[in-house]
Length: 395
Picture 1 (cartoon, rainbow, N blue to C red):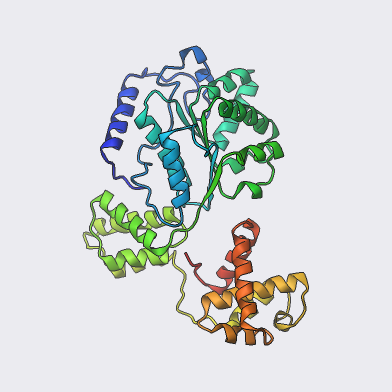
Picture 2 (picture 1 turned 90 degrees about the horizontal axis):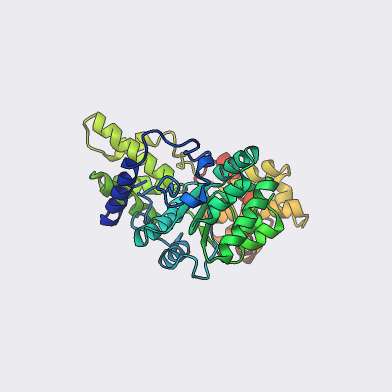
């Protein structure tokens, strides 16, 4: 992530360095994020080791580029940072795909709270770490101390909440911690790779708590937002790169911010080692293993063939008048791809699907788009079809 830091971040870094300088040379047993075992001592809660937040100081609102893809989530985060636990956004559930900035945003709230009021106990923990700690507490008969530790927190940030699925005892403990913190006006922030309604393996009573506050999604960034992200990364690294290279990277890596930034870092590093200036040819070579070849013209016939084979039906069935569920679904997807990835007019697309009207193509495209907003399995099917057609998904 970007290394750029403003004065606020510098102060945070200095504070953390000072805390580490005053810690014992030999860390207490269980002092890493896998345990906390010896940190469950509520009477000594003011110790810096006990109140470690585990936040990345580079994850701030200043380094989080705003766009249409994340505006609601970012605005809610800023409101929470100003009044943690005192807004209607409690809990805040931020969901979205891998590498889109969920963790960055969640920790930005925590960092802002700590900057505004250093006395606040902010804690970032992944759901897997929470589970590991709880199992350790069970093994050592420390469950009450484990719970007490979490009840001291003012702002609790739990990353990847979906990984609590099917862990019944861990969920039960988290449920009670959640209730107590919420009742005491403490802020809870959670991230997930899907909306709460699509989370499987979590108890209904826990899912109902997630609906008390705000659920906001982070979507794939549009082209302009990706360009802004690349430029900010370059600014943080103090590197100058031509605009055509920036736009090339932003256009071709459109689904994952983490991958976009990682590719940029690799490109700049290679240019430095070779003592060359970054140019478009170098960028193209760097992306050879990432970017799919999209020069091949995509036709409606090609799309129909791939979709029909994927669903185990014939192209004739795809064009037929039948309304069987599996065939109708495949037909909608094929129409959607034809609208999105060919230059054919809607009327022509309809004609090649059994003489259907252009409005049918529009309806099919809207139906597919609507379903992608809530159905992870459906999204996976679309991605697999795109892979088979060698098409790069649109941002």
